[in-house]
Image (tube, rainbow, N blue to C red; front, side, top):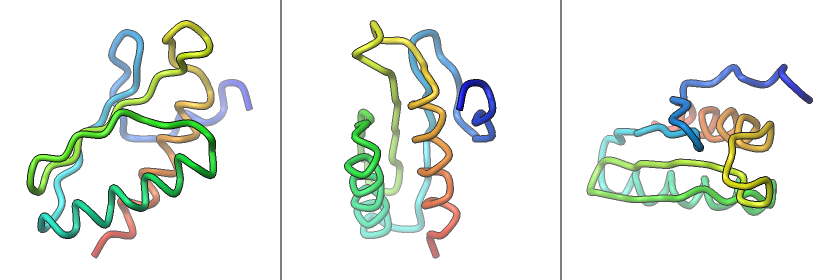
Length: 88
């Protein structure tokens, strides 16, 4: 998968990928974070998550590789973007 999975809307900030999502309500934020949790468990790759009412901030880095961005982070970003696109 090297190099072919960078089709996502996340910012590459030094040692991590980061994206801020704005949802229509607090409940939608909670539902989205639950979906992110399920994706993370399925990928066995877990992002940092912060919730502030309708705003969810996520970032992903690969700790096992020395806190750098790897294909795992790009794959996770794509899957989370797809989950966000499905939010009503």
